[in-house]
Every structure is written in structure tokens, then in C-alpha cells.
Length: 354
Image 1 (cartoon, one colour):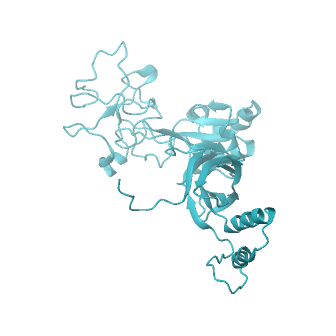
Image 2 (cartoon, helix red, strand yellow; image 1 turned 120 degrees about the vertical axis):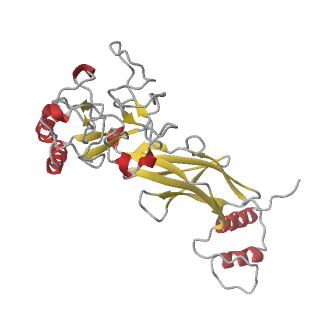
């Protein structure tokens, strides 16, 4: 069997914890939770080893280190405590401690009653930077880490303490008079014990395929549509619905949340109405049928709707063919195009205290 072209490091770092799916995904913690790191560290021979947990906080360029302690049976461990949210990184590093190795060898010879220690003392002098006449090639600078090895980099997704548990209250800003009305009710919700007030999308709502009250296919002029049918001539995901207020009103609502010690959570749904500006600005972002028409996420037909989802409809003007009914997130509004790269994706953005 041929030998490997790249020699393996003499120090092996194995069985690192905590990791998820062999390090493919980040483990989760909240701010202030100690992250206890463990690893098996082995090396051939009888040298004394030392090590550290290398830690990099979000946004930092340099690593800092926490000591790695031996537990016996080649198992080592160390701890670091995240002090802010974000994606943290850590590694396990290990090296030969040549000074500790020399001290251990010298101690064993002294305990055995050996009298001639000139060679050992010469080695020690070189390790500690003392000049001697005997050359043994063991000079060690301060911070020497002989044969240092490191594990791969692992990640920890650190969230705020509120991520552990919180009481959420969902409301539609339109029902409360827009952002100003929400700002007024926030102190009352805080008194009721709610930690987070959750809002559906606050972006402009599309007009095409809009439904009316009770899921009616023909809306009245005053029907506002679904907040999840995002995008109109007034903007898309980077705009707010003017019927809810201005950006100044939005900022005042955020300030009111901070004053009431309440978090605001926005439903950030990556889906678009047919009127969304992205369809014209970035047509390559969306899935299309072989005939070039857009795929749509559609609600299942109700008992009162007789048309099928595989034929064209005069109301929508869509071409025939199978429709995309399952590839977008569960909150998709009828007639929402399916994004090629962001289907089945929903997330929340938080504003307020913290």
C-alpha cells in the first residue's frame, strides 16, 4: 500500500464536540450560555501536550483562546462564553509542550536517583533561552508551540436570551390604524406579559389576482388583499405600504417598542405578487414553465370553485399547464410567482429592544 503523499500531523484531534451533523450545521446557544468544547487529542510517543480552544466572535478578524484542560484518557475540554448574538466560530488547537516534556523527563530521572544530569540541564538551558556550550538544537522561543495542529472550524449560532422562550402576540397593523395605532397599543400588550409583537408583511400589496372578503374571487374596490401578495407599483420588499404609514411612523413604532421593552417581529416572506418590481428588474430570479410563463403558488380550489388548476382561467389570463402549488412557502398568496432560489423560505426580522 503506497504511503500518503502528504504526511499526517503527529498530533491528531478527533471527536470534537459540540457539533451537529459532523459540523455541517451550526449548534445553537444564547448569549451568556457557556459553550463546553471537548476533543480527543493523541500523539505518538510520550511528549506532554497542551492545547486551547480558539474562538472568533462575529465580525472579529483575530482568534482569541481559552485554555484546554486534560480530563484523562486523551480527552480534553475547554469553555468559552458568547457575549453577543451572531455566528461564532471555534477550533481546537494542540501542540507539544517541550518545556513540560523536559520537566517531566527530568523529574522522573531525579526520582529514580540519577546523579549525572548534565545533558538534561543543557537541554533545559536551551529551552529557557540560556546560552550553553553544548548544542542540542532545542532552542525554544516564548510561546513556542512545537508541531501545532488544529481541528477544522466549527460554528455556533448565538441568539439573544429571548430566543429561549417568549410570549408572542400577532396583529395586523391595518386593523389598529397602521403603525401609529400599533405604537399606541404596545404598552398595553407589554402589561399583558407579551415579549414579542409579530406583524405580517408590511410591504405594498399587489393588485393582480386580488381576492375579496371570505376568499371571494371578485374583490370590491375597498378590499385590501393579502399582505403576503407582496409588491405593487409602489414598491416591493424594500418598501412599506403607504396605507400603514410613513417611514417616520415606522420608526416611531420601533421607538415605542423599545420604550415598552417589547420586541417587534416582521414576517419576511420571500414571495412576490405579479405586480412586484422584481419580476421586471430580475426576471431570472423566478421559475418558469417551458412556454416561458411564470409558475405560481396557488391556493387549493374551494368547494365553491369549479375551475381546475390545470386549465387557463379568464380571470387570471394564465396559460394552460400544471401550476406550482407546493414549491413556495405555506403562506403564499394566490397568484404569487415562485422564486427559483428562495422557495419554501420564510424568516423573521426583529426590531425593538435588544
